[in-house]
Length: 159
Image (cartoon, rainbow, N blue to C red; front, side, top):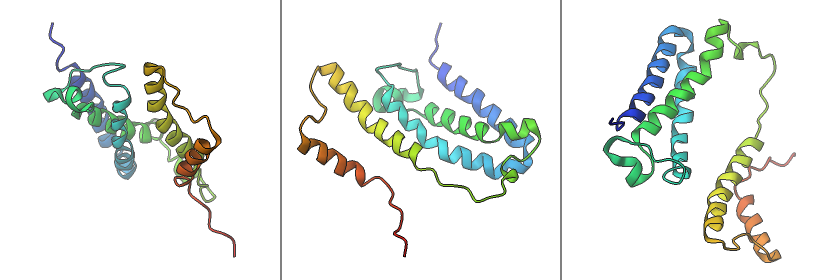
């Protein structure tokens, strides 16, 4: 049996569900678009999984050549768009409209995600080569901290 288009069919099923949410939830179009736009680039995380974790059959063998395929972007965008509105559509109420106060900005999840994505490939490389890759001297630790501190947003000083 030929499964060459299985991943594409699965991604298109999610895209059909995305389209259903878009057509059913007429008042949620901006949310669906934003959810899709924010999560579509997350398809690039397939670099972490292909080919070590799985090797999906993709159109034009893009996953084999570039480790990311068209199906990855189709699936990631559809999942983000669906997830951004499915609760509000089923509950038939705008959950975001219930907020009375200004949103707080939470940077911690982004910092944790950045650190994990920086460390994960390096750890996998160390595990496969049995090397001591982690900084062991205080000087190397200071260099690593200086590199990471450039990514952390700073609050403006109070005047």
